[in-house]
Length: 245
Image (cartoon, rainbow, N blue to C red):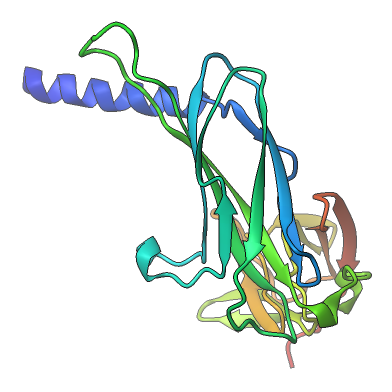
């Protein structure tokens, strides 16, 4: 390997190690937020738990890969950019801007908070700075769904399906709420197999495969899972999936 290539590889490795050990200094008071249509605004509190001043930028996205300028996000955040000093707090105010939204189900967006450290006083070319971003789910709940979901896990249905040469667990969500899974495990003959779980949108379905290196049998006795509720708490439940026909 040439010296220049070796140096470049070393810089990339150091950057990845620093990023993996870095932690956000700006802390949000919540792991998810629900905007009820009846509310004038949603207030989101945050605080600076690190050292030194930071520049913070906040925005919402719709979860797609499109540029922000091409996304339709019906919310405005105030302030979108601000300075925050060590030990200080800040309140973000999110207002619904009135665009048409589905009234029979929740909609999900994503709140982003980017913290940018100040330029170091020493003008060193060997200094590596990291801008850290926190991203959490932001749900819009229409007036018809004023109440939080009750026993959402019990309303889900599960079945075992064949997908090519493997088996998967299909999850059907007949409710108007998003089912946010923290984890899920299939149980077969006393053996627990971890599943790659995800959020299942309202009135939709999703398939959960076994984690890499594991396989699901055709017969599954039950599926143990945990959902995350409005305040970020975990609700555990289990289901006996429908067998293959």
